[in-house]
Length: 154
Image (cartoon, rainbow, N blue to C red):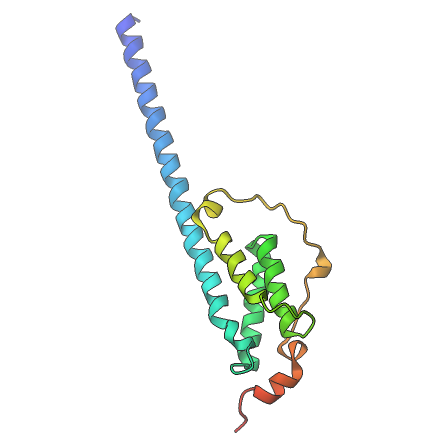
């Protein structure tokens, strides 16, 4: 094998290696965009349902649907988002009087939905404990408000 043939073989190798690297990076970038879109959609559903917890919009079915979404956060959301949503539920249950709980929840979701957070995920370092996971119902949150503002009976 001559010098020219070795040089051409090396150029073929580097051409393939650079092409494969670019394709891999493009695939990772595309998957990150898909993860971000999915995460943003899930957080938007939660935000759209927050009014179910206010005095004017309190609705037993709305709260129940929201609680399902909140529980599902335990599967993919980071600790900060879970803690913030649990604080919102504590306010609804009368166990926490933080008037900024909903705002803190929105900020935590926004930070987690950023493209940077999706592109460079935190690989499941959690400090949550099983006792923090509480299965709540609409009745357990604020029974007197659900009774007062709940769905109208025919």
